[in-house]
Length: 203
Image (cartoon, rainbow, N blue to C red; front, side, top):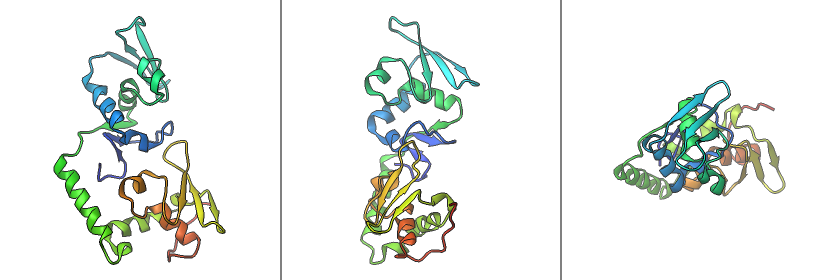
């Protein structure tokens, strides 16, 4: 788990990659493919203007054709999720940077910190939560839709799918990993007048 909110699995996002919801990259199987993007022996020719690549193949096909959203390799055709070729292309185009995974020690420290926050008598005043409240004030965090009756909201996601947010949960990666209020939940509470915040809107 990365401390940087722009890091998902081993992918450090450098520019918007809207073809995939970023939470996908946190899956164990995807992290393995991120690692193989540079360790597996295949050649790659990148066509930067088209944002495509041709990768060598050991199958009957001489080359695989790869884009940021698809590949005709067996792995992608079977799973319909980013393969090692797609991750390599994304890295070559400067969309992502493949980083080393955090050590078990770092993971345990993060786990202990989350446990401390959850045990706090005032979760909302914990430093990590205050950061999320500050992010919630930004115009970038403006909800696409707010249902005042059901107290729910829809926010633009990091990928193609939007985030569905309630006062108790959110489908974003931050909530999925931490199980603590994310910026979308704070913003929803602000929009509903349940949480104080002088937020900006891009509507």
